[in-house]
Amino acid sequence: MNAPKIVSREEWTEARKALLVQEKELTRARDRLAEARRALPWVRLDKDYVFDGQNGKVSLADLFDGRSQLLVQHVMLSPGSEDICTGCAFGADHVDAARQHFENADLSYAAVSRAEPNHIAAVARRMGWKFNWVSSGGSSFNYDFGVSFTPEELENGTARYNYAPLTFKMEDLHGYSVFTKNEAGEIFHTYSTYARGTENANSTFAFLDMVPKGRNEDGIMSWVRLHDEYEGGGSACCHAA
Image 1 (cartoon, rainbow, N blue to C red):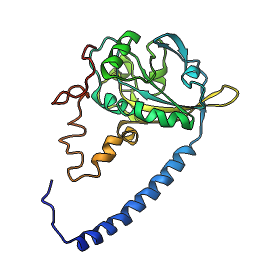
Image 2 (cartoon, helix red, strand yellow):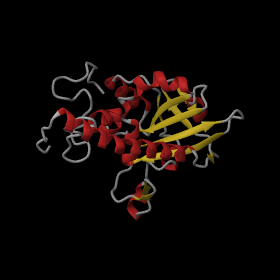
Image 3 (tube, helix red, strand yellow):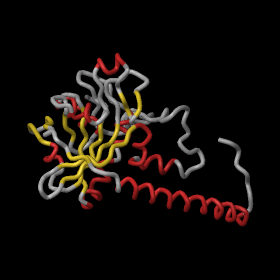
Image 4 (cartoon, rainbow, N blue to C red):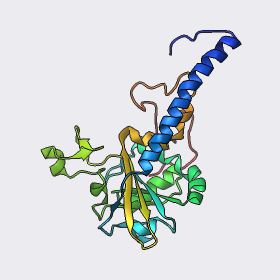
């Protein structure tokens, strides 16, 4: 961080007012972008996706839990892997607090990964998460929504992530997808976002972006850890995964 310029209160106020003009421009631009996002066309789903939940099989329609909108977080947790994606976990840490509000605004949430249900349950216990998290290991869901890739796709260079060719080899990546369901029970895909587009759902960044050190990164998210691995103890949750 560069050394700050120390000024009088009057000079600071003038500088702050000048910045406020830029902030208002960004706010209005963000509002326009959100409106354009909501105005995207929809795609009617023609597959009946079924997932493995902690209490048996559940459909995509079940994940709506009586609401008309569903946000799916594509969490990178691969079958047989002991790795927990720190970035996905960082995003998931924000969900349970927010759910008490957005569920009352007609939005349900579910996390989806290809890992086995018992592995998912173990990670959820470790992290202390209460939200719904299901396995798509028995379906093409992750592949259809652009976050998982077959070995053949990775080998022959046809894998695409974030609407562009994937330039590195990973079988699972992260993102969010949005779905809506009408009164006739039809389900539509309305939006997906990947890579840094997922930052919009992460309030930690918003807090850090207001302070002098900002995100204080040596590389994107270099400081992020699982919340029970921060120096000083972190979470009081159990560590067995």
